[in-house]
Image 1 (cartoon, chains in turn yellow, green):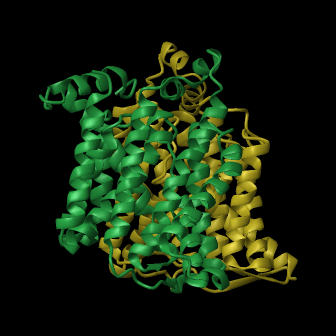
Image 2 (tube, rainbow over the protein chains, first blue to last red):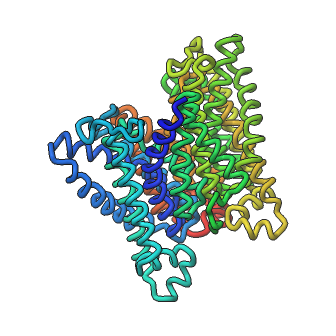
Length: 287
Length: 322
């Protein structure tokens, strides 16, 4: 069993999960909304990237710039049109709303791009040989970028004024509001940031994986597993759990086939939910 | 006054359903079977989702389990469809008991995520264990020549679900579930055994969907993982309950009638945008009508005949904040 290859493959896979799960976690932390459409935003971002690079024949970096900004705008729109209107409603309403949104996005993606697979074989192809292990260049680049952006957002959350506002809204919205924080604006910005992170993850997924409109539903389950295992609302927990789950998925798929391999993730998630619902590094989130 | 009107509705429904069995065309019967299957799913979902207020995105998992249990019995052992459906119902309950014990210790969003993932994983298993389930090829069953008995069975189950919901709505149990929905900690503080009630509701709401899965497979004469665990079954069910009115006796009936007709038109004319349309309906219902048609109608006095009934319903139910 090629331990080193699997380990590296798993960690590289985990990078994208980390970026996606961190966005999901951020949104949940601040808004108490589980965004079921998060994976579908990623899928649409990936498909748009392919369209930009292959369809319009523009360079890849155009997609890197345009797609996350587009996703942020889309996220802001969703927040204004839907989520802000049901803020005081029971949680089941926001769950139903994002679940419905996810279906709409999948359907629209199928209408636009068709149901088949596409990819970006021309971008970042080839592989590097590091310490005797073949590493696909596209996966390496996407890992580095994903972890880089995740850490950058973490830095923003920990060390800037905006980040402090976000954390205080997350911890105690009423107190934040009394302290003069415009919580509506913070929520809007957070949701836009979260969807932009999903969008950027989509851009990174495009050259490294086969993409189709159903990609979102496969990724979202893994992102759920990551934030549950890492602890809901815990940023470092999500980063760590993403890498661990990436390795588990790759090793599991190698040992037992792809179907059972991704089921491992889910079983781990169930185990964590039952034994320690707050997750490995979670502080315990009020819901 | 109490309860007379739901019984009247049930009676009228039963008479119409029975009459249809004798005079209905094959198309009408076929359409009604689909409608009634969804009606049963909607009533089941209404118990856990509407009354107890738990967003359950995994009901289609039990539907799929039932579909496979029933189809495999029918295919390998030649068990007739009605017996297979009964076994499937037991299989649904048998799966729900340990699962409920595990999942219902989780609250709100954790439960939603867990059940959502579970139904997708079950689909993956159905695809992966192709030696048992036939994988993506699916299982072809011997088609049923006359759909009328199947129709009558489904109609009877739907009627039972309606009556059970009416019983529940007029019982202390129903009030306890509503208390869980409105404020679980407060309910617990009042001495309501919330976890036990939630697990019970969860199991009860898994039985009928499993039976319906088996009957649906018999009706189609075919089953494969994407059909058995179809997300659009889940979505349509939830949309029906939400549209009609969550946690009401007649909400699922209203929602199922309206949405089935909408679905039929959409499937016939625009099958490619079906899912998006159902999604938009859910979104609009969440945004503008979270208490559903039943409560909206009661508020605006649409139902002059059934007014006392609807007033009674509206006084008791509906989302806390809308």
